[in-house]
Length: 500
Image (cartoon, rainbow, N blue to C red; front, top):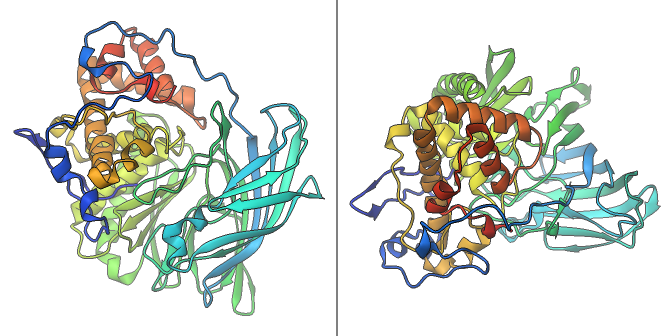
């Protein structure tokens, strides 16, 4: 997600953070005043090496590697949903089959119901489920805000299991990745999705409206959508056959594989232009008021896929949809679909750069997954670096970290939100987007282009469709280059102890 084309430069020690036009952040959240203040005393999380000794020996020895298998493994979703454009409700059924690779007699499961976040509820949004079954048997469950807890189970290890349920979604009236505004319907994070179990247990972190707190495993999707026949739909995956028309309704079917989420964008007035690059179809869906951006978005989509495939690894899916919409943010990423917010009169170059950032997320979170709540830098910093690469602005990435040493590049979102009243949200943007992309560029300059991009391609191959951690990235880069990079990362406030 890109909030805006964040300022990437620092001059005379003054931190500049440019938030998106129309971002409704509290005055205390922008963080610009707080970040100019003298440090208020270093808060170092338990187990974190003292930053005052940057030159002391530090190695990855002594830090326990994550040994827990990520699960449930190989999720395969079948969703059948009806969207009513009059009531702005989606109702349907969901079935997901997976393998219990976690532990014997697994007694519980969790799903994330992101539509129940307070920011959506206050505008009429919400999600509910009923008739929950596990392997065909009725299952006890409870909903606690964005977490669906299915209880009293006994699932054997290394065996497949199937969960089915009915669900109802009320879309909020708001310009967001999940909601409706005017004729546009944005369905990001709209269905119950399996939570991930790892060495921390079940991950049901809170929704984060100023970034992402998503974390899911790659799998298969078979999604059937019935709605008004005049709706033009962009979606993750590819449409199977032609829509079936019944009266004033149309039923569309989409399939996708090796994706960790499934998103839809609908507008009956969408126009579509397309091109092809590297045997990948690129589509731009745009409404009339955004027609001046269509060609620029198609161009940047084509160029981004070509550039990032060369530098990081081959784009693995046959299609990418770029959709225009109006949102309070800059853009938002989903597998094979990116939303570009064009509220107000945005410059063409701005739109192209945001598009490159969101397409960069196809590699960093889409292909190489991560826990976005615990390690947001692993996708946002990398997508910001990709956008600067596309813009030809790598040399301008010369950013120092915040003066507050308790903010690390490897900090979890909760480390920033805990200090929201002291500018923590602004510090999140600055550290994770600006300083993060600058850190990756510093690494490129240290290693040289050939070694850096070769190592990035190896990292891509190792982590493709999986989940990466900070440890995984550092280990991969060290093995590829044959260099001890821990001093570099530590000096750039990337600390394994933030996660371990």
